[in-house]
Length: 187
Image (tube, rainbow, N blue to C red):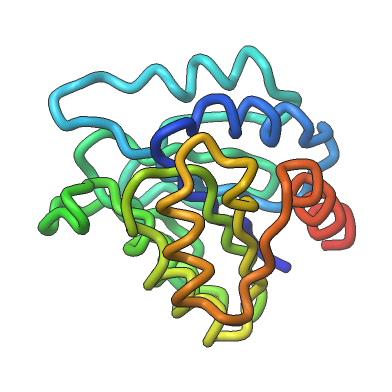
């Protein structure tokens, strides 16, 4: 595994507060995170999580190198993409499902950049963003995980992802954390 990509919307903070602080200081994979944030608002996500995590956490910048063991949050009103050369690209292309940043855009880019060596995780959310991207990631041979809709604050996004990506596995947050830790410690 070379990277983890996570997408979340309604209920994201609660779910991510369970996952990201569980990453140990020796975690070796970069983690790229898209949370739906309304345009025109500053994001405090990187600052919030930096104080709670044992790995570096930052808001992504255009063309910066993707560093192992670092969590990157997409900035508000920008799509975040992983490029094959190991850098982040930010884009102002059209919103997807009314969202920029879009989970689909991130997942499709990591599928292209990392192929079977990426894990995609769809968490709680109230729309369908992430479903098509997770399907692309799974088709590229990546590991597709979805928060069990019964445990999600908002079920729509996990349900849409499970409906479109047949190889996706539904897990409670504890199971997702376990898989992420296994991948990051085995890398």
